[in-house]
Length: 281
Image 1 (tube, rainbow, N blue to C red):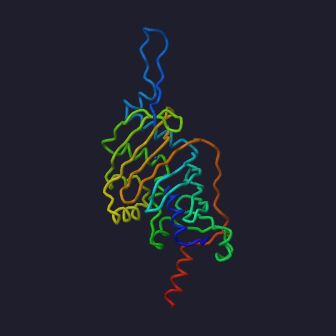
Image 2: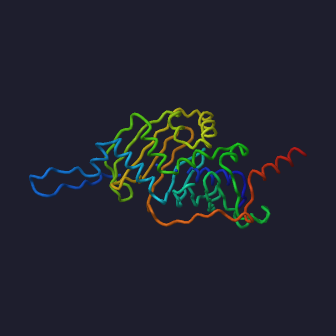
Image 3: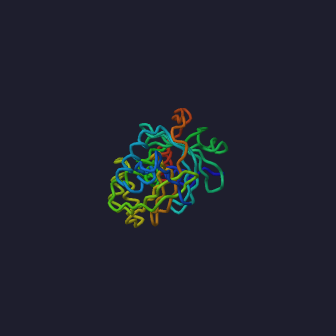
C-alpha cells in the first residue's frame, strides 16, 4: 500500500470530516386522574424548540467525550469511520478510517493539528517515522486541499449551534435512533450563517472551498434524545457531499495523546522539500 497524497486526503477528509427510523415513545403522567398531565421530555423537545435546543447546547457542552461513527461522501470520496472525541479544550479525537486500497488508517486530532499514522510498510521511506503531522489551517493550502470543513462537522455542539443561529428550524417528529427515542429537527442554512459557526482560524479556507464548489446552502438535521444530547447529525452539502454522524457513549473515559515528536514527520516541511526538488529539476 502506498502512503501517498490521496491516502492522506481521504484519511483527513473522512476524519475532519469529521463533527450532527421508527416512531419514538413518550412517557405518560401519574398521580391520579385529576393531576395535570406533565409533558414528557420528548413532547417538550417538539413543542419548545428554542428552549430545548439551548438545553441541548448546554448539555453537550458539559459532556467530556463521545463516540462517533460517520458515513457518507466528502470531496467525491466515500467516507466511513469510527472513533472517539475528547470534548475538552482543545477538542481531541482518535478515528479509524479506510484508505482507497481498503487498509485502515488511524488519525489523531489535537485542536487544529492532525496526525495520520503511516502504515508500517511505508515508514522506511518516511525517515522511519510513525506519524505524519499536518496543521489544518495551513496544510490544505499547501496540498491543494481543505480539511477544516470536516473537522468542524464532527463536533456535535457545532450542529446544535447551527440550528440555534438559524431561523426556520423545524420539528420533523419523534424517531428512534440506535434504540434511543429522539426528536428530529431540520433546517436549511445559508452559507454565510453556517460559516459563522466555524472556528475563525478555519473559516477562510472553508469558505473558499465551498464557494469554489458552488455551495449556496447546507441542510442540517439533528436528532436529540431525552437527556438533551445529540444522537445523530446529518449534513447535505450539495457538491461537497453528505455526511451522517451517530453519537453514542457520552462521558466514557477516553485518552488521546499527541504523538512523540521523535516519531513525527511534518507534512508541510515534506511538501517544501518536494517542491524544492521539483524546482531544481
